Length: 157
Length: 181
Image (cartoon, rainbow over all chains, first blue to last red; front, side, top):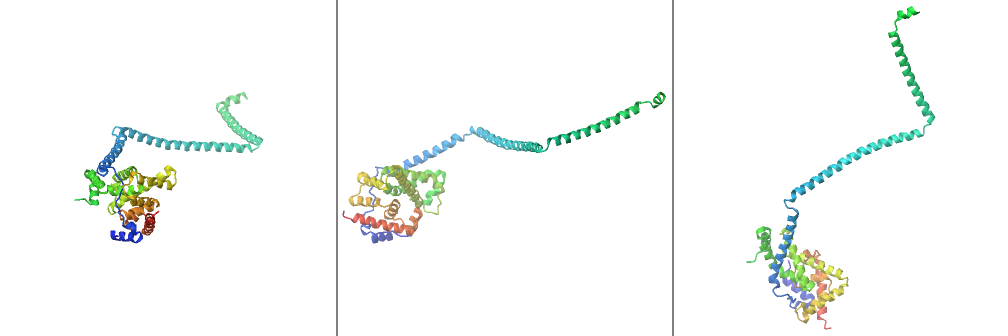
């Protein structure tokens, strides 16, 4: 570290006149300024600290703890509902997609000839009717056979 | 017996001795810091506001100070930062050229803020012709005899740049004050 002689010599080399000048501060300062300053600054530091503590005390009183807990709980519920509503949204979107799929299939039918569609439907219906008729006829024949007395029939013949 | 800086900090960090330690610290360094600021802003009211802000910052942040570095360097740095910020804000607030701000400060030297004789007033006015940071470098070296290494830590500038800045400033001021006109 440099010593003060070096600093003085350096200035003497650069600015000889300046190096010989009195270096005392000549600024005027109000009477007792330095005597009173430490007390003033301590007061200001404490009042600032008190303001900060008051602020903390105001917002973090024990009375407010239940209220804060309620707020935290409400936020938690909010989050829960938010995620739940998201799952509803997912479900709704799935249903929406299904409906769209049905609509898409409906649009496919737009491209099929309507007569062909009617014929196919009718044939299918008739076939099913026939099946039903045959089955019904078979059933009736069987009932008739079961309920008819063959000896009476022979006598009548 | 005067306590060392590390003893003061130790007491400050103990809650029961905090006020006492802070009071000791203010009493120890208040004049030095006041004049660092006053030489830069010239006006007492401005200097008073600034040093109060500096000490409030010290009160709020001294517990974070790491004792391996020099306390006065730390205090000096807070004071110089606060002062340079103030001067920059003043220029922006007034929306006037730097020359006019300097004229205003020179007027204060003539207007009762300074008790020195004519040659000392001339020195003060000569210093005001320097750019602010160079003025700060010159004043730190000339009045406070601050070593370049310490100045480098305070102003975060290289030693080489500080030497060049100081030499240039000293020559310029010498020329102004030795000029008979």
